[in-house]
Length: 132
Image (cartoon, rainbow, N blue to C red; front, side, top):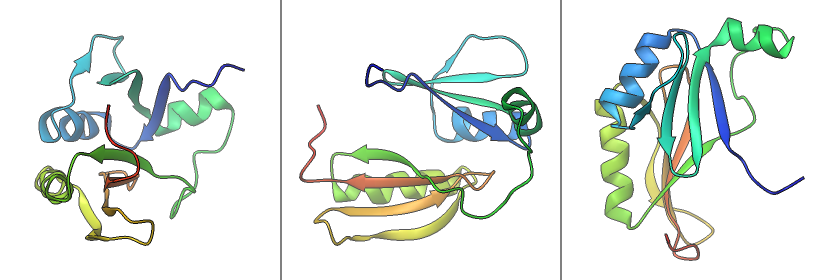
């Protein structure tokens, strides 16, 4: 297998609400696509939003489940100030602040927000991994 992630799909409860959050609230550029799914440009990896029930059906698994899903998405930024600004932007767009920005054990600075479907996003400044 080649080491590559091309698409991350989130199963969402309300597709239109999630589109508004990511497109209008966070300003992610939307890519053209078929009705009933939304694609957003996030560099070389696309983020897709798909109705939760339909995504579970496609994978032939149950759509039931709540709480911690065992993963978090991450958005790295260039400074501590940018971490705070991104968290503020997400909250203004309708996210829930999960963990305020703070110095972390690995030497960086980060915080977490949850999108309208409770998917966790870490916003981080990592001095050991400069942005290209």
